[in-house]
Length: 215
Ligand SMILES: O=P(O)(O)OC[C@H]1O[C@H](OP(=O)(O)OP(=O)(O)O)[C@H](O)[C@@H]1O
Ligand SMILES: O=c1cc[nH]c(=O)[nH]1
Ligand SMILES: [Mg+2]
Image 1: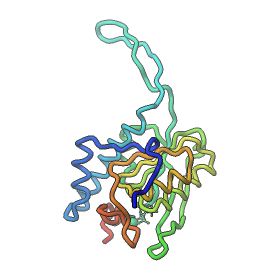
Image 2: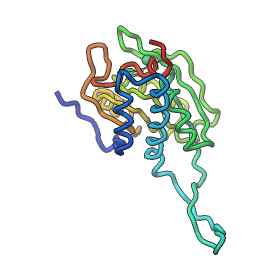
Image 3: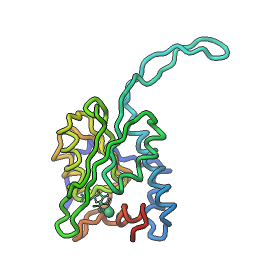
């Protein structure tokens, strides 16, 4: 059965370099070290797309030859919010892109039986309601964890939430887009389906375990 969702709020980041890196990420023989490096790199590529509409303003610059009018970012404030644990792997790549960003944390684990998310730690920047939030997690499976994290950000007053994932299931995309009318989703791959344990197929396994070498 085909899962329907609002495609206009989903950006598939499918640059050839991204597709190449995702293929290595999926490989069960990729080492923990390389997996971690790839997650960081892919977050940077994805962040590039997710910040594409950031506003600019004119600035006059003196080159060694003459004055010219250039464009610079007009003070957009950003918060990067990883969903623990696996989301942590995406933070450094995004900080390279937006060094002035603040970082919040939402701790969430999925119950292995029910697949329901459980919140265990949350800490956001004090002025988070004035910031564009890049909510990051490599995996979007049922969408339960992302929805709980989005609710938390909305309750904190955040209006601009952009969810950055690396691999998503159609079920997760549909669940998040239905749950929140404004969120935009960026993903490097949209996979086939979920299995009976709510793991993404073909997927890449458990992202947290592969980033931290815990299995
Ligand atoms: O869309 P969902 O069905 O909620 O599944 C996705 C969530 O599951 C994984 O986290 P996990 O619970 O394995 O925690 P971890 O990051 O600590 O490994 C993943 O990193 C997402 O947070
Ligand atoms: O496929 C999946 C689903 C949830 N969490 C993961 O890390 N991988
Ligand atoms: Mg995990």
